[in-house]
Structure formats: structure tokens, C-alpha cells
Length: 125
Image (cartoon, rainbow, N blue to C red):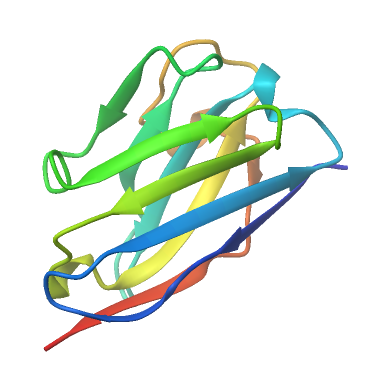
């Protein structure tokens, strides 16, 4: 069984940075497209970033482009989301997800087979 565990969330001031990690167990993520999504209460989750199997391709939501960077370390079975210049609207629970059937990037929730439990990110003034 695949498990994804996010960490690195917390409270940060406007303009600050956080790095989220997603550690996988049960299966190597080198065979998966990986993604980050986020959700605020009362709203559907939204796509944030995705990275292809070998990390050669990435894609971002327009709202985070230029501020967030997704990366992966297949040797550590871990995916990261570096978040810079954080804004209050980035406040959400962030989830990582794995798509073992894919090869290129994917922005679609339905493509992802496994999800982590989420980590809270709060950006305040």
C-alpha cells in the first residue's frame, strides 16, 4: 500500500517561505507523476503544481507561477514544494498526490491514485 506523508507546513508571514515535503513509502515515486493540490474550507481542492516522472517537465497554476517550485528526489522517494513570496490567499491545506499511471504532468485530480493526509499552511500579516 502506498503512503504519502506531507510535512513542512506551518504559520508564516506575508512574503515568507516554506518548503513542503512529501515522503512516499510502499512504492517508489520514480514511477509516478507527482502533484500538489490545495484546499480551503468550503471550496473544491485546486491544482498547484505537478512534475513528470523524471522531473524534466513541470507545470504550475497561474496563481503560483514564479513563486512556487516543485522538485523531486527519487533517491529519497520524496517530492518537494518550495513556496516563496507567500500571500494570504496561499493559506490552505496542501496535499501531495501520486499518479502511477501517468508519465507526463497532470493537473487533473482524477488522474491521481494516492493522496497524502495534508499539511496546513497559514500565511498571516
